[in-house]
Length: 203
Image (cartoon, rainbow, N blue to C red; front, side, top):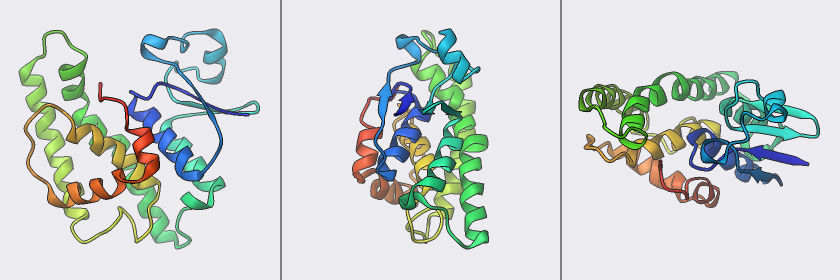
């Protein structure tokens, strides 16, 4: 029995859901986190001591960290297999890490101020948006002559960055237009698995 614990309004849960659906794997999603609670229950903490979502559970095996889940899926699902070429594989790993260490952290403050704070601090939002624009520019330049993030095959880097881009493009804020990023996002967001993962309102 495979379960994914987490709510779909979490960008990290969205990555795991998208990956599982692209992989064609059967699973049950259990609401957890935010208003759903659960994450502080002892049984959940036994699987994920961080008390965060998502957590993937498979017959006694538990895995947390959304990008670790994507990497795991790439090892068990042919549809998400990493490139055989070691340099291309390294580039997939590079962009998956960049999402977690650069793009998403840059926009975190803007997101929290705009969606989770009663009285948003405009200076904090502006600083976060400035950092995010720099990251969006890097991704846009990279995608200028590419169909997908790495090579000609959709993969886990597209999922990780696609979820981050979904959040970025739906922030209620002015952004510099990034045509390559928009074109790539429109392509991957049209995939059926993306529709299921990204169907909930941002927030």
